[in-house]
Length: 293
Image (cartoon, rainbow, N blue to C red):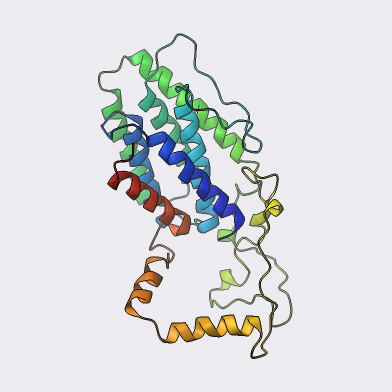
């Protein structure tokens, strides 16, 4: 997992507990809205073209910020992330003295953000999003004055628009050819990457320039570089050779426990919500099982 993905994942894992803390999961409350939408997003990631792990990580991060800003706009104990993450300006403010419904604001912000990031999902995903909107709005609007509904919807939409506008210039908004560059000069020599797939589209690396995207908290991705890998070597006894051989030898003598662990973390395309989504699922499960407060 590269540094950008780790930062995005940490952002959402940080945001979720703050948004859900101290709130029982009853219909009509922000926590319920958040959990319902995140459950759906985890499924959408599995079935939406272009949603490789880096792309999914980016969507989770912006969805988390939109959710947070929608919630923070009505809570004195939460501070906006504007000025704390790169490039985010202060979001729209509520009208002073006006009444708002917190759950409707969150629903409006999250639903519009989700519709934007998953606009290229298939027919099943589109139907699922529309069904979620109908279900949430039927429950949330019941018993709420029409002017409060409209004011709350508008505020949530304004926050979503603000976050989406911010997201569009980070370098990762447009994904062409499923993330595989149409032109790419492969390095020469045994130490360089080579395609192993027979699929024509996958003859170039996936998103090789993703690390150039705007970061969230650090000035740039190179501020926290990864340690270099061992120098390529086919010489027995070299660090590279020994590490590769360890993996190979282990794969030939897997225990039942190791097989279960490998399958749990395999996160194959279309079989899971990608590695970042897998961690989101774990976080949501812990919050639910532990009845976090």
